[in-house]
Each structure stands twice: as C-alpha cells, then as structure tokens.
Image (cartoon, rainbow, N blue to C red; front, side, top):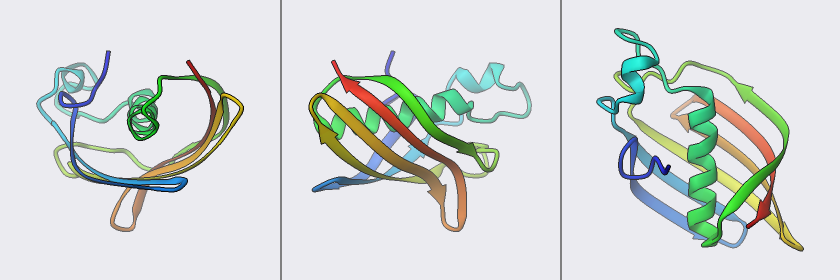
Length: 122
C-alpha cells in the first residue's frame, strides 16, 4: 500500500546526485488519522518512515526493502491539522544493491523525524 496521493501529495521535488529534497502536503482527512487518534490526530511514526522510503524509491526508480535502522529519532508530534506542509531532505549512497539513507522530515525550524537506514534494492 502506497501513501502517495492519498495521505500526502508531492508539491515539489528536486533530485540531484545523492540528494532528494521534497515538499509534501499532508491530507488531514485521510482515514489513518481517524484511528490515530480520534479528535487528536497525529502522523504515526512508522507511517513517517514509510513516506521517506516511498520518496527514496521514487527518486531511485527502484523498489526497496528495509534491512536495518541505524538511527531513528522522533523529535516532535506531527499533527496534520496544524502542520500539513512539510519538507523532506534525503541524502543517500548506493553500493552493490544496498542504499544507505540519511533523512529528515521537518517544517521550518521543527524537525519531526531523523532516520538513518539501510535498504536492499528489490
């Protein structure tokens, strides 16, 4: 299941050698927020991680599977009602079917997630 075009919309994206910068608009009406949590929606951490993976897959035009989380820090609650326009910065390197990613999800001066992970190209 992809969250692209349902949970979030890509407003802008720039992909250069080893870097992807993307601006997203979260859909506060997405059904995921009805269960997480009713009356107090937040973007689940695992969903934030999947969004980063989807953006990396799109940039690389490859399917990826997570093989290792090297470091993961959730630094703030991401409420789509108050913060729907978010940014993603990903730096990555590829080596023999493996992709190392260093990413952050943020808005202005507030960072929501920092993730360092290793993926296998499927």
